[in-house]
Image (cartoon, rainbow, N blue to C red; front, side, top):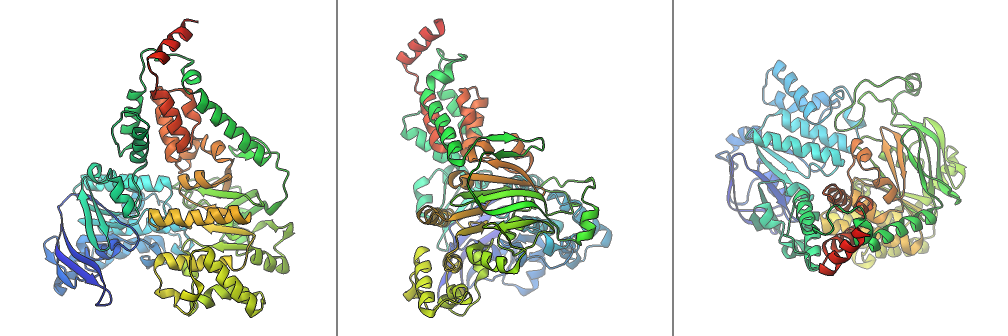
Length: 640
């Protein structure tokens, strides 16, 4: 289906983004392409349906030469593509019209178009959204519309360029199920991703580095090459990382890339005839780990002022907070529809729920939210696609106003214009794609825009610009007169971030700040945010679909479900909800998933409480290191 030889491409005629690419993808293959930001993945993807034409070499799609103008229509009918950013792909104002756009341009008959639209929307869990406006959808919902539009064309090849980047965990799993189903029917799938668990499900993995193929092989052959992947700023699957750590600890298990395989291998390694079936095994074998887990839970609870409790509505909340909040939501509801219609339908029963997300007939983007954000904390916000996360944070400095209820910043209702102006000076928001906040001719002017607007002197503006650029690792003198639009994607994101920091906010609000970044860039950016929070005692609120990032960084996590507060507590408290989180479209941190899998395999009860990788490693090592002396002690204990 894809056959290229010595393919080379340059955007400017001088610097080659792709060089000497030779690649053959057969019919019905499921291929995953990996690579760091700037490695040429998206550029190569655009050659697969002739959106770009090679400067050197040849590219053939289903036997058709991409350089032949007369073949372009047939090529683009053969290869359907979903772009990294759905806003680059949506063309119609109504969902069903957008999904129908491709088939209409292929000349498909109207009844057949209707069938394809209906089935494509069902595949991506958007039944009921047919007449919704595309510009009113969340980022994840837009991504699903774009995927449906490609599916409706019924292509022979489906090319996904980071198509799961904006999806919640349930949406990512759903997309992979769709891909596997289509692949089983004979469709060729080419998936570009940064999620290694997705790569592990492919038939073949190709790694690009600076426009060249660095590695090509099966997932087991490629994803276990930890040294090579690290040099290319890529991660390895969690199962591979964990198995390597355990091998370093002397545990005799194979290197695995799939979590279910690793769980079985660990369970086998932990089997001890003397200990098998003992009720007190967890206490004896993992006593130190259990104490560490219980101790960290108690200290975390004490730090935050109390324990957690479940309410009748399923909402788990931390109680006993004595600190004054910097931001308070009091019975806040918000609708993007006419307010009178929304209030009239407030109590109406919902009739449908999309299998990947929220109710398509829901009136309220937020409903009766009571929430406090405390000074100096790192608060995470999670929720399924369309749960109201972006709407919630847009209320934090008055970008949106509540339809009912009120939002207070430092105790003042920001419905008041003066209070709202002050809130915007103290609460900085970084949107899903920070680089889209750039607009000035030079880096200096872009970062200086906020400080100048609040009336600071030019000397103070100069100081803030230099300081904020330094905080994000950029040199003011070096980039001062550069256009922000000529910088790399990572540098653009840093400049946009610096523009918010230049306002010296006391609260920093981040909406999916790491979406679309390669693993190394994501770690670097989140490390920067974490360091700033710790060094300046800044309050940070971060929306994320990555449960691992939330577990690693946050003091407290709030979970939204269909616009309402579903759960609230420390990471350990929230992730203890397990199946309830899965039911609302969220996943668990990888370490938590593995711990539960091991508990299900019969390992000690202490595994059901773990959620960090370090805790998990310590518990596994303890469970697997039952030597002869330990076995004898166990027998004696059992006899007692």
